[in-house]
Length: 328
Image (tube, one colour):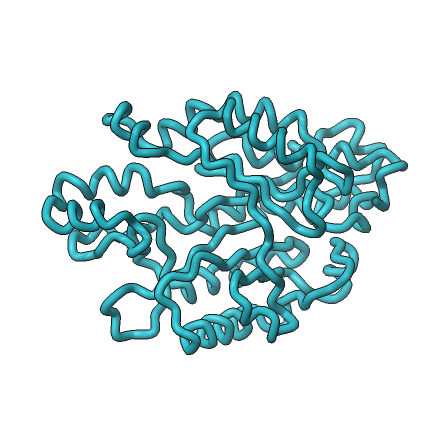
C-alpha cells in the first residue's frame, strides 16, 4: 500500500491504516505538518511487561517507606498487590510498535546494591530486561520500518550517577547512531524521511543541554485521578489555557490511590483501566490535533494494545486534512 491521496482518504478512515506502518501511509497532505501538531499514540510506562517477580528483587526506592518495610517482612502477602498495580503494559515494546505506538515513556533506574553498570526500567519494582536490550529491540524494529518515527522519553532517573548518565547517553547514541534526530526548528515527516532520522530522544536531565541530539524533556499532562470523569475535567481545564509549544503528552492514564486499592481488593490496574476506556475514548474522539488552543499532540495510555486506543488517536489526524489547516 502506498501513501494515500486526499481523495482516497474520503473512502478510508485513518483508523484503518496498517498500524505497523501508519506513518508511512499517511496522506501526503500531512507530510509537511510539524509532528508536534499531529495526533500520536503513546505508551505510558512502556516497559512494565517484564517486571522482576523474583522474591529477592526489591521494590523501587520511590515507594513509601511503609510499603518498603511491609514488602521486606511480609513479601508473600504484599508483593502480589505491588504487581497488580505496577504493570501498565502487558505487550512487549515490539508488539506496541507493531500496534502503532510511536511515543514510549521510559523510566530509568540503576538497581540498588548492583555492582554492575546495567540500567533497567522501573515502576513499583525493577524490570528483568536492561535498557540496552530494549533499545536494540527498537532499533531492530526500525530497520524494517524505515519511514516510521519513534519518540523516546527518558525520565524519572533513579539511582543514576553522572557516570551512569554518560553511559546511558553513549548507549543511546551507539544504538541509534545516524537515526537520531538532532534538535531542529521544524520536524515533519517529509524532512525526517529526507534526512534519514527516525528517533527523537527527550531526556529529563540538564545534561541534555550539552548534546545536540538530545531534546529537552517533553511536558506530560498527568491528571493524578482514579476516575475517568475527573481526569477529563482536569484536562478540559488545562486545555483552556492552551497547549504547550512543541511536543507534549496528554496522559489518559488513571492513577490509583490507597483508598481505591483498599476498596477494590480483588481488582488490578488493568481492571480499573479497561472498565474506563469506553468513557476515555469517547472523550478522545472529540479532540483535535494542531497548533490551536485546546488541541492535543501525543496521547498516552495504559494497556494500549488491548483496546481501540491506538486507531482512535491516529484517526484524529483526519481533522488536519482540510486545506486551511494543512501548514499550521
